Length: 93
Image (cartoon, rainbow, N blue to C red):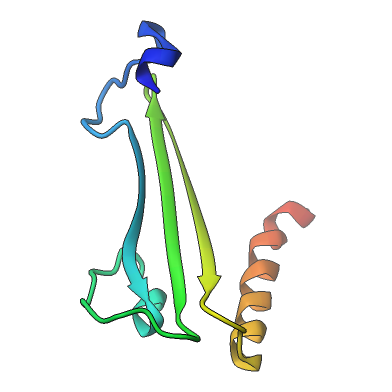
């Protein structure tokens, strides 16, 4: 990626200018920001948080996605809708 972008887009501060990872936020740990992994296996019904990030020319961007393994429960659907609505609130003004 750095080769494609060229020298004008070299990172200024970070030693990891591009990253895509799974941070270990599984199941009950998915409610904790930047959780540490527990080593347990992923199970049906678990909530997973995946992340991708980039830093170019001093600017940074982060993208996170919430996923549910299998079919979400009614409780998971409800909480997911609450999260989506909370994210939309600032844009309604």
